[in-house]
Amino acid sequence: MKNNDPISRRKFFRSSIGMGAAVVATMSCSASAAAARQPSAINFHSGFVSDPSTYYEVLEPVTKTNKPPMVLIHGGAVSGACYMATADGRPGWAHVFAAKGYKVVVPDWAGTGRSGYIPYDALTGETVIRGLGKLLATLDRPAIVMTHSMSGPFGWKLLELYGDRIEKLVAIAPGGPGNVSAPTEFLTVTSDFVEVRLAPGAPILKLSRKQPFVAEPGWAAKKMVGTSTRFPREFLDASVATLDVIPPRLLLERVNYANSAPRVADFSGYKGKHIALIMGTNDADHTVATDKPIVDWLNENGARAEFIPLGEKGIQGNGHMMMMESNSDQLANAIVAWLQTGKFVAATS
Image 1 (cartoon, helix red, strand yellow):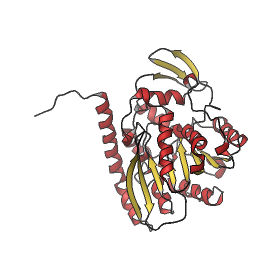
Image 2 (spheres, rainbow, N blue to C red):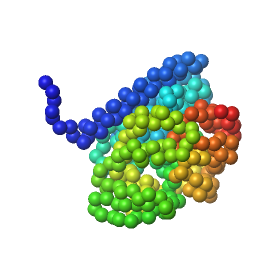
Image 3 (cartoon, rainbow, N blue to C red):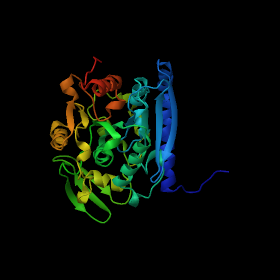
Image 4 (cartoon, rainbow, N blue to C red):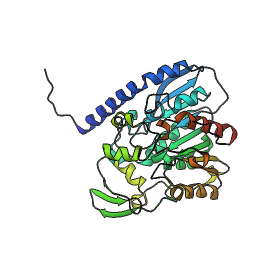
C-alpha cells in the first residue's frame, strides 16, 4: 500500500542527509578501492561522545606510529564526509593523512549530520564546541586540530578551553573569532529574520532566526566553487546533493549578530602554539584583507601563527573546498610537511 502520510520537516532533513550520504558512498567506491591499494593498511571504526551527542569516524594505521592524532572539523552545510572523499571520488584528506601514519578522527558537529538532532533554539556554537572538546579529551594525547570555514571560530575557542589537548592547529579558510570578526552590515532586523551584508558590495542575505539555512544550488555553487579552477565542475551537482542545512543560531553567530560570535577571553592556551592559516587564490570570501588580521591577532596573543596564501607557494586556482579539489593530494602532502618540519612545501601538481 502506498504511504501518503505527510513527512515532517525533521524527517525530511534526516532523509535528505541519508540521500546525500548515498551519493557520497557512490562517489567513494573508487576512493575506497584506491585507499585499499595504498601500502599502509588502515583500520576504521566510528563512535559517539555524549552530552552533546557528537558522532565521529576514525581511520587509523594498522601499524602504530608515534605521531599525534588529527581531528578534522568540517565547515557549514557539509559533514565530516568532505574529508573522506574528493569531489571526483578519490581518497580524501582523511585517507591521505592516515596513510602518512596519523590516527585521523573526523566528527560531525553536534546537532548536525550523523550526530543527531538538537532543537534549533538550543543549538549554539558553545554546544558544538563542548562536544568537540569532549572528543579531544577521549584521545590518548594532544591532537592536531584542523578547522575549515565556519568551524574556524570553534577552533579558536577550543584553543582557549582545551589548549592542553591541542598540539597544533591548521585553519583552512577559517572564520575569525568575535574578537576580530569583519564588520557585518545589518539592514533589517525583525523577530523572524535578519538581512545582512557581509562586506561592502556583497549580496544581501536574508537569514531566518528560527529555521535552518538551506544551501540552494546557486548559493552552493558560488560558495563551494566560485571561480575555482581546481574544482571538477562535472561533479558539482553530486556534491551539492550531499549538503546539509545550517542551524539558524550557528549561522547568526557566524555573522556576529548581536555580538554573538564566539570570543576568546583567556589566551593562556595560545602561548607558543603552532598554527597555520591556509588560503586559496580563488576563494572570494577569503582574501589577505580578511584572513591576515586573524594571523596578526593570533601572534599578538602569544601563538606562533603562519599565514600561508597558496599563491605565494606557487599554487594557483584553489577555492573554498580545497580538500575536495583536483590537487587535494598536493595540498595534503604540503600540510604534512608543515606539521613535521614547519615548512609548507608543495610538490608540483
